[in-house]
Length: 181
Image (tube, rainbow, N blue to C red):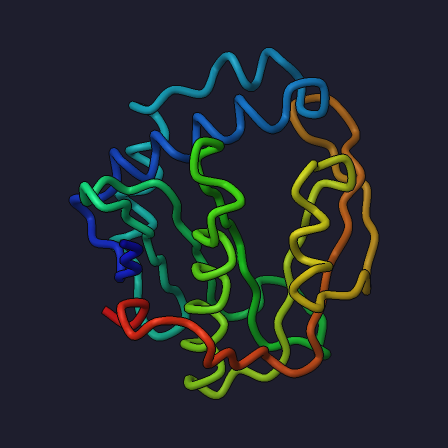
């Protein structure tokens, strides 16, 4: 059973665990190793507590739970954080534990966030992805097109980023009603 629900502050440690585990598993050889080694569930928990406390109409975080009600993925999204008038909203993070990837958790998290953004009147959706990320094709499979490129300095290393965009915020209706919980 797949459950997607809004995150609350009590979910911060579990979200932090997913965040750290997915970065350490997905970005080896892409993000400087010293940065990956410095990531801890404890320091990410503090970051997530602050983020979850500020949730509101312009920022949402949803979690995906497995059948044992363990958080195995999350998505954060909201109003566009940079100036690009083509898009009103963006996905700022979407991560699913490797043990649950390719089992629709990421797809359903994306769809649930897109639906909430669309129902909030946000037209156009955007997401930045590391160009070397093994998951960048996930966004292409959901209809995203590369609309921007950038190189950003991150932990002392230049990282190439690709911006995927949807000119109309996708409004998906082909997933279970448990996603609205």
